Length: 96
Image 1: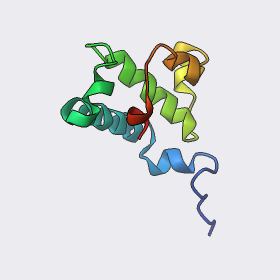
Image 2 (image 1 turned 180 degrees about the horizontal axis):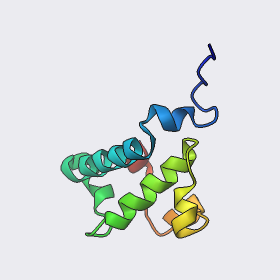
Image 3 (image 1 turned 90 degrees about the horizontal axis):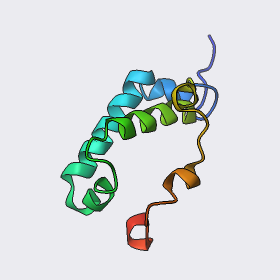
Image 4 (image 1 turned 60 degrees about the vertical axis):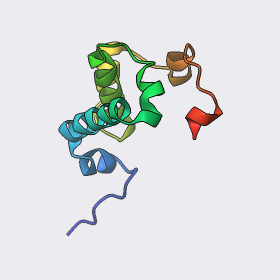
């Protein structure tokens, strides 16, 4: 019997999150919490009103970040997180 991989090894984290379906579900819950929770509303308002692309980009990014397929790169090309968020004013209170 083989010992399961630890989180952060290979695709263990991706699989523990439920794979692609689990990651997409997580992102939808996250976006809904931003929309419905007053203290996160300011971050929600930084996203386009139709945030389907934002949801898709985050889910695809997280798939690769957790060790799964590189879905973001396949659809959108390479990403630079700092550059992607450079236009947003994130101050200390928002970082907490």
